[in-house]
Image (cartoon, rainbow, N blue to C red; front, side):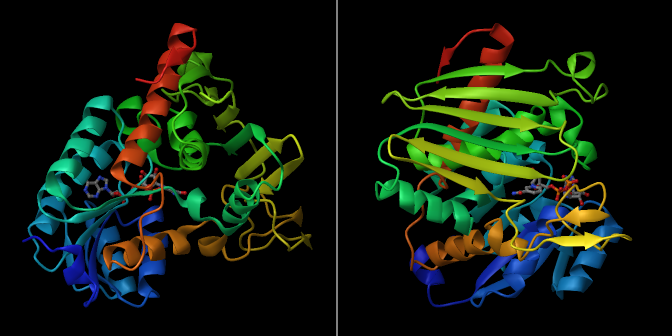
Amino acid sequence: MKHDQEDLSLKTVRIGIVGAKFAGSFHADVWKNLPGAEITAVVNRGEEARLAFQKKYGIRKAYADYRDLLADPDVDVVDVCVPNYLHGEISSAALLAGKHVICEKPFATTMEDAEKVLEAWKKSGRSYFYAEDWIFAPALKRAEAIYRSGGIGKGFYFKGKETHSGSHSPYAQTIEYCGGGAIIHLGSHPIGYFNHLLGLPSEVTGCCNGGRKDNFIHKSLEGEDWGLGVLHYPGGEKVLVEGNYITVGGMDDVVEFYGDQGVIKVELTFGSPLSVFSTKGIDYTVEKAETTVGWSRPAVGESESLGYRPELAHFLACIQGTETQIAGTTAQGGFDTFRIIHTLYRSSREGRTLPIV
Ligand SMILES: NC(=O)c1ccc[n+]([C@@H]2O[C@H](COP(=O)([O-])OP(=O)(O)OC[C@H]3O[C@@H](n4cnc5c(N)ncnc54)[C@H](O)[C@@H]3O)[C@@H](O)[C@H]2O)c1
């Protein structure tokens, strides 16, 4: 059954979450507190996690197979929070089943799957929302507004990185499941953000460790544990993006803008207004922190500061027809971000700068 966007403006939008782990939980925490949204179903392959999630969030239906969710008429939106290799398959199938789709990064793990999602989006007439939370993080939105208003003059160089000590997920360990290593898993954030801010670059230069023995630290990881990309823009701007798993001390997300009349620096994860010294440690400081003993900068309101709540609130408003979808979050935006990642990997392997195709 297909709903027009107008139909949904008058009623509660019914969400089906696929994936009952880390990302599924931070999405569910937002949905539970957003007026106009209701989680009607959850899908997870593992039964224990599925039932615990269903109970925790008071969800009516739970399925083991996502295809049951696609056949459920009580679901308007499929919220894809499963491992990377399933993003393309589930997104395409959900769009073709008449559902709107919200999908966690990355867009897909192969170009073939990415193209299928784009085709399904165009064919289905449904909305697709690429969930790049950095686009919605308040500090980055403020930086964007300052930059767009000319506050640092003409921007010519930009940098963005996400780094930590390695993913907890078994699905992050192989190229088949993850699509690559640190660049697709972490570097996808700055790449998606700059695709939103500046659009598609014309050329990309990639430089990544080759995986396994070639990695700095993670010798059993199939993908790279360190990767860089330089995005070359038609107007001459350069963007340096980085993803790495060689950073101890917690997840470090940093973005910088350089203009001819100023500089902007954003510390997304270590920019907390809170400083704590503890001799025994505390419950939580930032994602992936190995210790909380001594001085730390505990995160405050991560759902807001990392952009998860404003992101999902915007997607809901778009489905309800009260907001227009932000650049870089449509299926075309997600596909373009994937094209940059795909070209960066090819460039690294071939050792030369390549045009985006
Ligand atoms: N935006 C962000 O900052 C952010 C943060 C964390 C994770 N993510 C993304 O979210 C996604 C999920 O990551 P995660 O860390 O929550 O957990 P994960 O990748 O370890 O697994 C998610 C859940 O999916 C379930 N699952 C696996 N195969 C399934 C299938 N075929 N059908 C149904 N369920 C299945 C697993 O049992 C698990 O409970 C990843 O793609 C990741 O890139 C994004």
